[in-house]
Image (cartoon, rainbow, N blue to C red; front, side):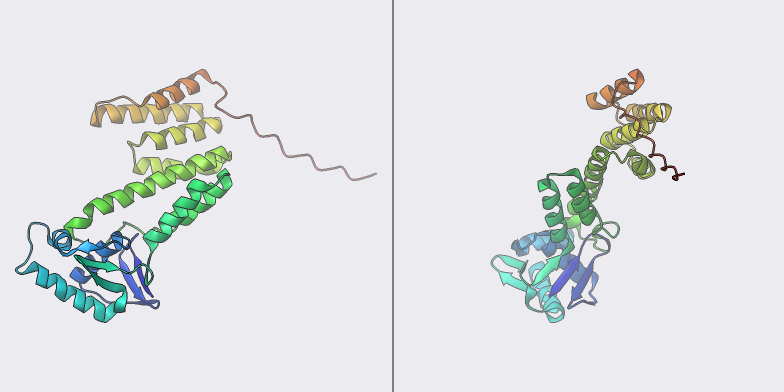
Length: 255
């Protein structure tokens, strides 16, 4: 069984053992793996691997790369007009497992189940996606996968806030919002978590920082939802849930 790991440094495993590949071989396998079982034409492979700076006889170069890779990974790499594909019955990818976990999260009825499936999906990331691949044709996918990870984090935070886990989330939300300072949904989630922890001033400070950054870098104000949350916090209305009840007193020992 061929395994391709794309959500971090790209690795190729055959029967659990790492396969050594040249940069071009790794690039070609990554492009095919991103197609998820669909045929990738030879012309598209040429564009993805070399862009506007392709070598002499690029189609022959692709054919040579395919032959080299087959000697290392076996029959999972299939010739299919007008190009090639990775047979999904003989090749597994972490990206496919990610898709399955996200699908289960979307179908979950309870926030707890949503959180569990999203944690499974996020655990598949091992760093920057497609690290070690430098083909021009994968840059859009690298950006897409990076954006997907942040979006899944936001989905997980949202589900955990519904579970009342605002105290547990503050530290992680603070770090994540700092790493993505212009993401308004993250800022709103951090504001809500802080406000629910009785930290109204800190929540308002998050809004002010975001508003200043948006004005400076984008020339816009926060979105209406965030402005509404800001007004909610200023008024001190019931966005903040009731203070959790104190733990029950220990029963007195009988006399």
